[in-house]
Length: 519
Image (tube, rainbow, N blue to C red; front, side):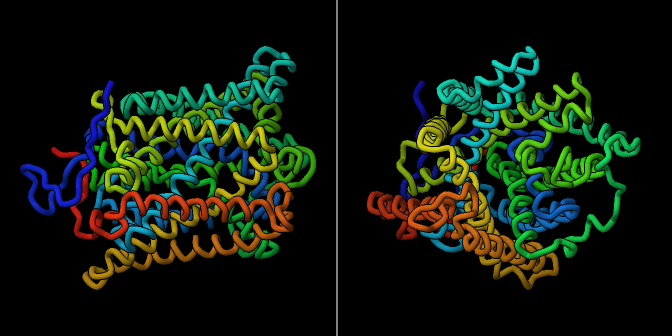
């Protein structure tokens, strides 16, 4: 079926649309409500997957202050969420960070901000697909009680084939529109949160019964971030914590398909953030009380189990039968996030193409499903190719690419936060509310993330960061992180030669009406 090309031309007017009104890109209006939007935000973050992969690592870095670091990571995200909410009210555009930073800082800064979002999402998609694949075979082995089936994940060709199948399935669901996405997400998010709640309840029960020798009594000192032993440990833990919240802005990427596009996505993002921080604190405290944060046995800081805590705790905390549910929840979490993470990247590419910052073919919307079809397929193909190449080249390269993800996240989040303050700079004196929500809070959040960005950049230079591999004596994580940003610059310069109007500031400016769905 053909795609609809809705890309506007420079100087075009739309019949019946007055100056300052909005025009449409062709996405399906009213496909998502407040609850559905919040579910998409929670799903994209993948709380159960984030917990199993970073709970132990965070405990290993900051010890008993893990809950405090979870709160510390929540603070800049909350401050940035206020920036997203205010910008969405003024410009409810599916390009989100790209569109807003172009309007605030101009085409080149905005283009790089959009690139940061796109490349971060591609990295996350590939990682999610890999995790979902591993848990698929691990769960199959648990259910059949056959270790040889679990071992199939170690077969590189089987692993890649399974991974590509999952990517294709997630792409197909996203391609069919928000209605299909929403139905799948209600089931998968509901399942993972229910199982997580069961794990927390059983962990508290084990803690109160003193089932494990390493268990601890709760202490309010756990909530004190200043008790972390060193600034390096705190920064490392904070970087992991920030990663655990990444993805809530998917709520905003669906703003043109959400009922009440100016207000609902912002409210949904705040709801998602509250659910996430509550889930992380409850799980972290319950697990720490049950087994402690030591570096041996079931302790959360044990380096042998820190990359997959739930695999180690499922049986001891929940028993052999209910423990399988935790494996199911991690698989559901990774699979759900794999599917919804296509939403922000496809819609960012759609917006960039619509405003002539990318080739016009990606501005085509499917006439039946009302989705950015080509952009969604492009994201799926890019994810599959990226993961396959990285896996075949080296497992170390794949690992270091994931470590470089934090750099991209801090890059485009901080730019968006600063864009908010600059975009609304003329309104900051109108009221105390405008001053704080459009200026102070976004700038503070942006500064916090920019600080983490700079500190991470310095840490990445050390070859010991990540897998420990080097390129000409420089840490490979640094080379990959900076290299991906440099690749964005190269692509931007090439695109500028093909689409000079956008980069001259002739297509998208602060006064350009938002291109959203018409009534």
